[in-house]
Length: 222
Length: 222
Image (cartoon, rainbow over all chains, first blue to last red; front, side, top):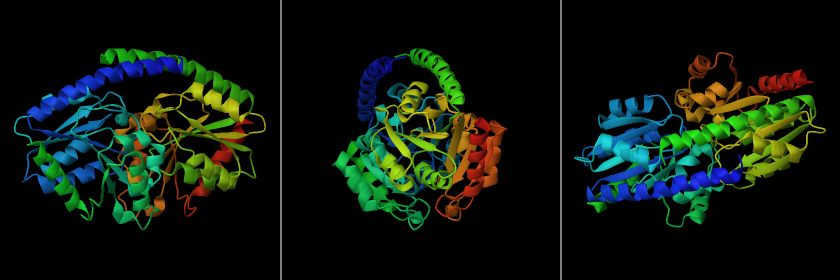
């Protein structure tokens, strides 16, 4: 195949996807449901963060979780058993990202009634998920300390598409060279409005700021 | 777009890609060049591993490095400045993987004359690179300790496609829950012939076994 052909197909897919994403975002707004699209590398700590965050939020707002994976059920089982909130598992049949169509189907499945917040845990991948608008109200991107502060240079689209950034595993900062200020500067160069939350879901350090930010974002939607 | 259409395009791309990959593999074999395709998540430590490994190997065999990234030059600059071996940088214009066509072009650019080993550092991604045969003689997959031992369950294709697996950052094992034996079992369930190299490129622990394995693999090609 020529490179051109791939690009053409991608453009056509993306154009349809954008319209679907806007429709979903509009529907969610009408139903007063806030949808967070959580993205990161594999192993950055999405599930551990979610368990901690949901347990802080679940008595204040009504939460549902959509777990996406290529395969396996481990994350959905972990979330459900450790938080008790409504959780569904999506399998993407090998696709490296979620698009607005898959997200709409998952939202339909989990239901918008009686929920204030739906958290969509995207496939662990810093490349493809950034290319597809899911229809979410907010893109929350995790960068973990062991991955290194150079990731915004190497995966710029992801760091452009995020609205807020969580630096996880800061309890391991002594073991790794990770400069929080440098990471923030590199992201801000791509994305001046970015918000930052350095934290450890393991020790709880920094979790309160993220909790307040999510609560304020959900309240704004009402 | 319908899901069906995407799948069709992928199949057509993959069919062409397989033929190109076989042609490249044959050409490399005739020229007695061993090509390693190095794959992992973002931030698993590919570049740090390469610097350490190349400095151990470079007086014994002739090495060239192809660095692939969506953007940035940082990895190629690091490799070249810290090892002195011939290095070129590939930019994939947003593509999440390398295919056999891109790899052939890069091999043509770096040249097969006077090289025993070419190391291709693929895009940091556990999903897409597993789908495309690059024409490499060996797929070397890195899983870093901070990512967690559950990754083979969640990204099974990558762990099926690897020939050898390096567990990096084992110096950080006390900080993270990572069970080496469980990770090996989970990979072996998918891939019974898998070989394993737990190591720390930072402390040097375990590097010798990997060095010997690479030297033996290159020698076999001669």
